[in-house]
Length: 320
Image 1 (cartoon, rainbow, N blue to C red):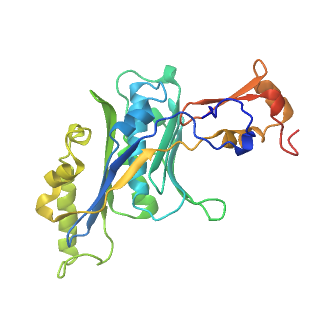
Image 2: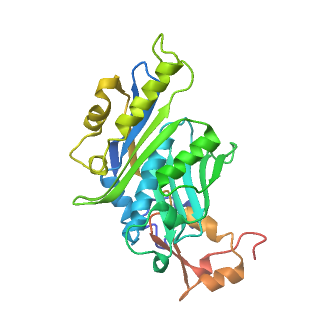
Image 3: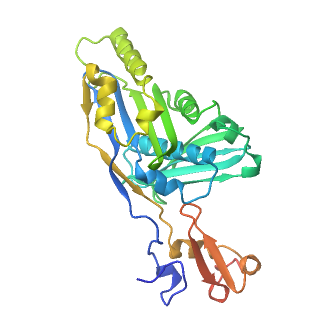
């Protein structure tokens, strides 16, 4: 098999082979669950070795890598609750040391992400998401392709943690009672990341007979209180299965596990995709990008560089 990052006899627009990146799937990456006859549902996300494969593609400082890990776990957990064909993404833009944070997940669980950071501007210690992102906005987007209308919700960044920022988004944009716990860190097994998401079910669907509004509120508050006892160490422990961790939290509340969902390494770059991006530049820009007769395009997600001979790259009509 030829290396798709290098020039070949196959025309660039036809070369859709994946670059040499990890072929990794976590079969039980997302464990959905609900509490029987109670207005509570949720997802527990455990990225396992997938977190290390994604985060080590870039040489980010630990604080930036941890924020990226949290964003990946959160995005996977939110995407798993939706019915869509395409991609669900989280994007944060701010004026802090991390100017851009992006994670996205397809309906099949293909996960990717990256962060643009200014390491020289990072404060010492372990700064939180609020300090890293600064003032800006947080956006959640469902993109189902050119044939479908794109849905996007945007809210100003508020809160010191990514979990708090997400809670603010749901409170203001979705009017949905929810709570998020996030964890990411470097363990003896490598980087790990996890998310626990709880949602209050609206209406009477699935709720036990005779459960009035007061009883529903009590059930929701009880679930929140139990979830609050979860620790970062538990969330990142490979030896503690998702089933067992959820049982620890909710076994007395009628825990019901739903079908788990896989997550995989999901960079979708190819020579064809990057060639189409290059075609959008004019001749002068292409000449400026060339070094020693070649243009190198690097995928921001997987950090793989693709080399294009300048004399074989032509601008699209109207871009000359």
